[in-house]
Image (cartoon, rainbow, N blue to C red; front, side, top):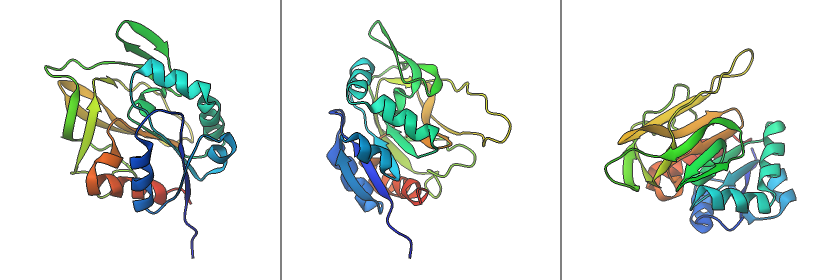
Length: 212
């Protein structure tokens, strides 16, 4: 009998962490809400929420050692899932309200305001699931819940040799933007799976199921 995967929801005072804990538990994980570095490092999966301005989230994340934890986990091939601004900070830079702020730099690219007639992009939207996606297995045609005005709009990471190609998922609101990326141990979604009903639970179940 396989054991239940342990997931740490990183508590660095950004994001609706309690809804994430409930959703991950519903998806079959043994969930711990923690700001403890060791617990975050040792869990089978690390869930990184993020709500608010890019600059504030990156500052809070660094203040709690999140950049180091994420970097060490990824270096060791240990899974990380970023959500909303928790996805955005994985990129090199974020440009928001005139501020150009350095992100964690795990992926190349810049997060910028969407060119859309109505912002924020708030509500349900479909996605174009990436080839070979694990996260979207069985939910490719479902709708997911978005709340954002900024996003990454290009994908420029070159992968060669023995490494698997990333699975890149797109959505459209005014223009195309990255809705999710699955790149080795690092995955992220711009939408909120924890607010996306049964489709979000199934997506999280796919991630949790990949952890052990």
